[in-house]
Amino acid sequence: MYPSLSVIFFTTASGAGYGLLALLCLLVPLGSLPRTPLFGFIALAIALGAITAGLLSSLLHLGQKKRAWRAFSQWRTSWLSREGVAAVATYVPAALFGIAWIFFGRIEPIAGLAAALLAVVTVVCTAMIYRSLKPIPRWHNPLVVPTYLALALMSGSLWLALLLAFFGPRPEVNVLAAASIVVGAGLKITYWRSIDTEQPTSTAGTATGLGSLGAVRLFEAPHTSENYLLKEMGFVVARKHATKLRRIALIVGFALPFLLSLVPFLFSSGVAILALLLAASLGTAGIFVERWLFFAEARHAVTLYYGASAV
Amino acid sequence: MTSLPEHPSAKRLGLVIDLDICVGCHACAVNCKEWNTGGIAAPLTDLEPYGAGPDGVWFNRVHTYEVGEGATGRTVHFPRSCLHCAEPACVTVCPTGASYKRSEDGIVLVNEDLCIGCKLCSWACPYGAREFDEDAGVMKKCTLCVDRIYNTTFDPEDRAPACVATCPASARHFGDLGDPDSAVSRLVAEREGYDLMPEMGYSPTNKYLPPRPRKQGGCSSAPVELNPAVPGQPGGLLGWLDRLLSQQ
Image (cartoon, rainbow over all chains, first blue to last red; front, top):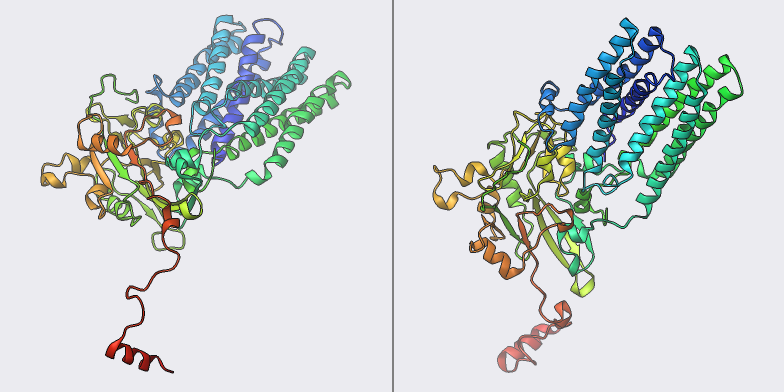
């Protein structure tokens, strides 16, 4: 599948934003985080800013951007529509929670809980867009939804740990970040193992129905140059680098942020802030690479008509 | 609405494609392009049509495959277009309601005025039936020539999809596959027509008829060397002439 940068930026940025938002809206009412309005303003601005930047970026991928509002209508059947509705709905309790906290110094647990729930629902909807697509077996995988959730929690907690380095460190948040990195890496490694060993869903034989007559090989393609199907669904550029990119994602996106998120236990403020800044940036960059791979490694059934033997 | 029809009619219009007959001439693809670039989904944009890398929207593409090995191997021409599935995920994933399945005859269409060009429907189709029109920013697909088959200004015999109407080998048939007594349904039953990628669970309406089995032994039963039609040497005057002319 063609790794569209606007979509990858969207899921990476909004994933981090929803992770951070959910953590703020849950942990602040529980009393585990600073309650100063300044912290509330900066932390919520970063969370909602990342979400908004991601959502705007997702619009870039549309052929008819001005009609985007129509995407809220088909939530009964479409995960993309559900994602849109949940994404916009999250703003309402998040804004109420933020206004009460920043301007009135009050923490509203109900609004916080609603915002956190909707943030989780939005990430689930995003993941379900991919998870529900049968023609792409590597996306139609039970590990996709838990991985999206774990990576949103991971990037959210890394950014929260960085913010807390300025507003009053909380060691338990650093532990949460490190733990979510372990969970995220574990899920990702399991996912990679799963897609490397899974049996093909469909073959050129089932795609053409000619499999019973023998091996099916493409003799002549219908057209001489690339068309939309091959550009969008037949993207193969990254595959030969997949192993290298997986290693880069694991080291940059998981191993280094894990070690860096533990630095504050050894060193104080200055070094800790630098380490957490690096951890959050590298973790996010690693998720970006991981998401790029998620697209580039996915094989679409239509490629079976164009010479692929199995997907 | 992108919900599938709650009370679909029994009518399921679709195509039956005979892979035993198709000669791979691409006439169906060309006539499809010709009709539909002026039909309801018009235009079928071509980018760089005279350049080095022409790229355009087509609703019908003809692939050619080699199947099997050696003497039992064969070449199969394989036209591919929308199968107007009974369970079309391309419809249910659509966030705007642009994609829909008609309750009256099962045809899957795109309302281009509602399409936002998110391309998700093309991801959801395993058959590659949908092609994005970069120029118009919307998704396009086979309409089963809905603007021909119900067109009362046409003579009744011309009310067929462009691909079917033009096929010079009669490898394509159009009809109601929901009616077990229709000509197309009988053809499917008789020739053991099949679904493409049934494992996807989309229940395609269009059916493909398999190439007929080879006669006993396939190619290997044919004589290795051809025998002369006229056995032996001709005698008489012709024989004398033949010998004379054969001399160096």
